[in-house]
Image (cartoon, rainbow, N blue to C red; front, side, top):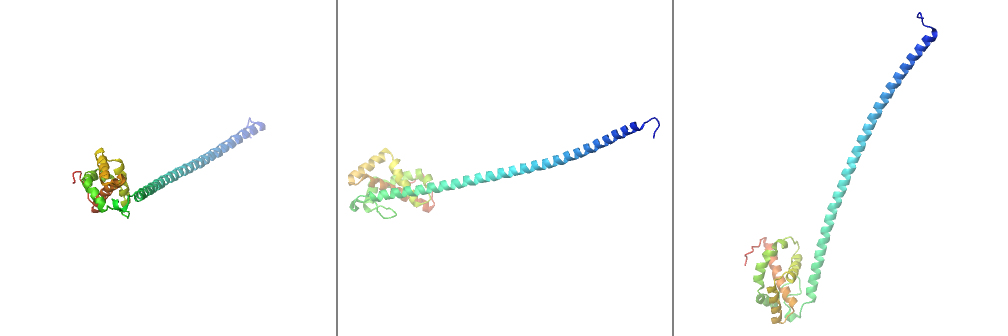
Length: 211
């Protein structure tokens, strides 16, 4: 026992030393656990980020697929509507034709001009009008896939986009031939249709000066 230290003093010093060692050990353990916790937390956060990135990617792919499916469905609907409209127009034409003796176009498919219709076309100047008009509508006609779509477009065109001069000629021709004005419109539409289909089959373009 060192000189000058009582037993109680030695015990006190030993107690302080043990307390200090215990605190140091506790501190080391705490630091170690904090390090482990931080590594675990960083790993969990990275997993959360990876999961979030994967979910965002899957969501974007789902949206893109939905948009593509929607576009295809809309296109199919448009094509169906176009075909239905063309069928209705053709049905209207066949059910409103004049008697056979004065019928300008046939009722068989595809529609074509009768001898009477050919006469109307000549007197109407249909060939000259078509040679001037076809280049103007060719760019749109090229987007139509089926022949019946081209025909439907031609019937629509002659009823909505003619000049005042041509409208007057149609009315005069219908009067002179004693036929329904719708029949004369139909003649003009068939001549325009035949011109566009001929050019498409030949794979040719149309020159605005073609006569």
